[in-house]
Image (cartoon, rainbow, N blue to C red; front, side):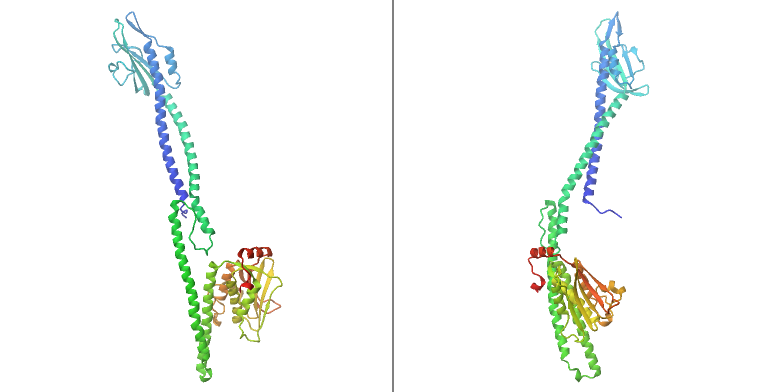
Length: 479
């Protein structure tokens, strides 16, 4: 898999390339100047030795006498790896002493006053040659003498390599220091991006106001685009809220009117076939109204999960309100309905409206598809957990279907008109509250199937703190 693109990696790579290119140029320059420095130093020694030989030339009895000074060769002998060659050429181009085959590139008759330095080859080796002319003023030997001194170049190459190595080490160290500094500088320069990302991650999902974070000038277009997107998203969310509210009003009203009109029909005046069709219309209208209410309830729950701040509530009060709303007045009197609650008040952090809707759906599901003669609703408390248990005496749901019935539009009671939304709504609400929806099979000593809504419970100190922080009364006082 290709690695994710990284701005830090891209900047680091380009800085490494720039530093490597700069280091190569500096090392090449160091090599060039090291050779120049070594050549200059050794050329001075070579020229000094030739001048010393020139100063020791004398004329005795009409003959040129060359006395080779020891000091001249001692200077050149400082380069232990080099060999030295010399030749003294008289006025008639005859070799007075030295190596007769030591030649120069430039003709000697053109070298009259100033010393000349050149590079040549002697005995198969590269040598550096110094040529020093000296004009004799003795009448017995008129003319010009040339002193030629040559030296191999091993020592100067070694010196140049040493100087280059030292300079290269310095360049490498400085490049590494510069690279480390550049990495730190890049990290520091990219901190505003990380801070902006952390600000957006910590931001409440319900907060769609513009982001107001101090950022460098280069990031302002990026922040502006985020704010523009959040503004458009806020408009879409507001539009969705209006749509849900309008749909709830516009759809429920005609359904209620339709049910009323159907109820006004006198079934006694219809034949058997008409009464059968009327019963089907009443059944389908009831299912349609129930499904519409659940769909609108599901849309409301989804919206509130992202838009409502959780507050501390008494779970007993929320459950009691859901119990009263879910159990109809026209319930069969033969069905025994009970509500149980502990002595202590379980305080939970919740959205009372969504949680009440979840409990209502579970109770309604039990009444529609499970209850035969008994329905029990219990609020229980155990350490840091609070539960709402809805138990009926119906056949229940097989364990192999428990995982599927919490999904939307998946129901084990489709044949009985189940929509598959009741448990889905409850499960989504509990997940948003940090809880879960689970089931319990019939126990051996009693007949009943139980749906359990499990929620995290606040202790007394946490409840007091949350209540003071939110400045909101409990559900029993708000509702």
